[in-house]
Length: 472
Image 1 (cartoon, rainbow, N blue to C red):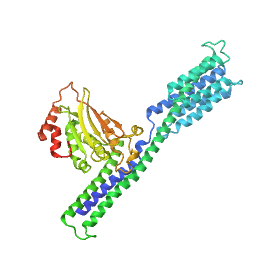
Image 2: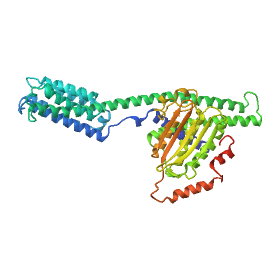
Image 3: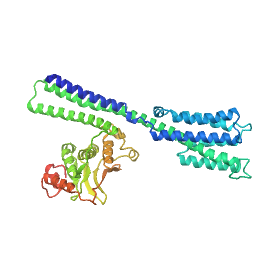
């Protein structure tokens, strides 16, 4: 295989992987909810419950005589429905069409059983519809079951013909309360499953809507740097003002590189989110010193901060213990937080990166003097594709804080935000500290090695100050 064909092969391979990633993002199978074996068993169990309870109701209302064709047929249909549901393949449960069908079938069977006697017990029929209403509107099975039992007892006490001489052995009690309790559980479970599926569908639709909006924003954000790259490439090719002097060439090359880096960052965030959603983002755990990460992240963003004349202060705990985690991912989380602070802090502002610890946790904070975040936007701040209302003209993907939260939670940690409009915002990442009940020589060795590899300064603030006049 020649060099040219090898390059074509590698390019095609990379293009295929990229297309696969985009297809995964635009058609997220991970969002589609598939019924679990436990959910299938639960549906089968409640169907057996309704079949047995309805058969019991028919048997009781017929005084134990089910020789008539219609009562016998109804009992057979009830039991047969449970047998059929038990043998339905899993794929039909995955399509989420079983629950609505069972609601309709069971309603027909139960109403038929109630109206089967020559003198229809209308109080029981009315009680049944009240229980169905409670099941449809109840928040959970406990509320539904309790509500239906209380309603049944109220009917027995005030509306039932057995109210004056009520005994636990009377047919009115034996039929109504246990039957309605069982039916309430059945309808409550099925109604709850339908509500959950509706919420899932709404969530999928909302996520896809946000993704469509974000893709439009991504296309716009990519188009701008590509136009800049094209313009400087044409300048370098001498298509406008002729050949450039060396300084102009270096300026154009630097501008092209910066814009390419911006495009790569946008696409990388997008693809990494798809990996986070699929659970395929590689992560390895090792001792990590957050002080070292904080210094490196701040130093790497020095140029960006200097362009806005921002002051960055490092306030690091000298005796900070290491954490067990993925250093690359934790660095990325802090990078996103510092980058956000730089982006949303006005010129001449101040950003503070601090570390600390308590008995259980090690934390790192990023505080800025930006405009702050409105209180109504704080609850959804860490959701994917979230853009602040006032950030329409600010370049970004709306994925940074979502990535931060996902990475931190993967380390059994938490990230919180405190903000006051006109004052600033503080993000706090809290991670579990090392287990102090066991000796961790590797943790200590790693921390000592990390300290020995960096230049010796009197304190961390001095180090950053000497390397960058605008960072203290």
